[in-house]
Structures are given as C-alpha cells and as structure tokens.
Length: 93
Image 1 (spheres, rainbow, N blue to C red):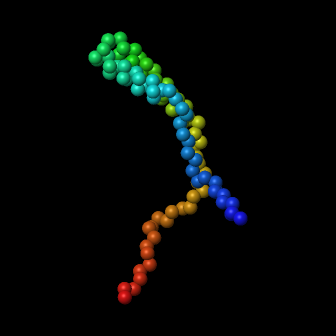
Image 2 (cartoon, helix red, strand yellow):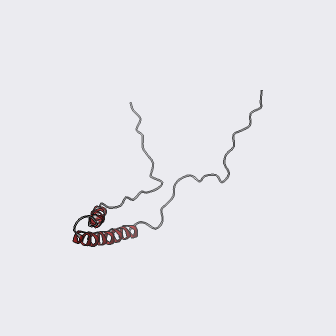
Image 3 (spheres, rainbow, N blue to C red):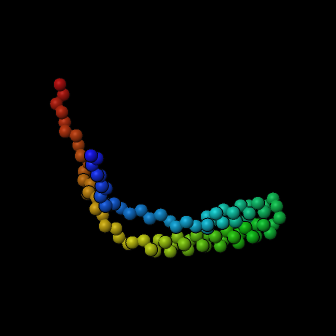
C-alpha cells in the first residue's frame, strides 16, 4: 500500500496580480504613438491618450490589489542560525 503523503501548511502565501488588459492597451498606445512619427500624426495623439488611460488604470488596479493584501503573515518556518554551521574537522591521515 502506498503511504499517503501530506504537505504541511504553507510557510508563506503568494499573491498573484489579477488579470488585466491594461498592459496590452499601454503597449498598443505606445506603439501607435511611436508609429505616428512615420504615419499620420492623429494616430500618435490617440495612442498617447490610450496609453495614458491604460497606465492610470494599471496603477489604480495595482494599488487596489496591494491594499487588499494582509499586513502581516504568520511565519511557521524554522529560524536560521545566525552563524553558519561548520563541518567538524577530521584528523588528517
């Protein structure tokens, strides 16, 4: 019979950011702004506006998700020694 292996409780919690279209819109807006140097100038104005609003939305969402994080985590890991451990010296033959 196979032994049942259980993992203990996690020592740290990892929080991932929520999915967002803001990075894609920011990249598209900056690309349109850069392309306006070679194409029609209104593309650059529209791209800059899209990039600005995407950046503001991305920062707002990031701040909101950061504010929801717990302030303190309960650490359950072992305490590391302050002094590195040394190997015992063996007598030379």
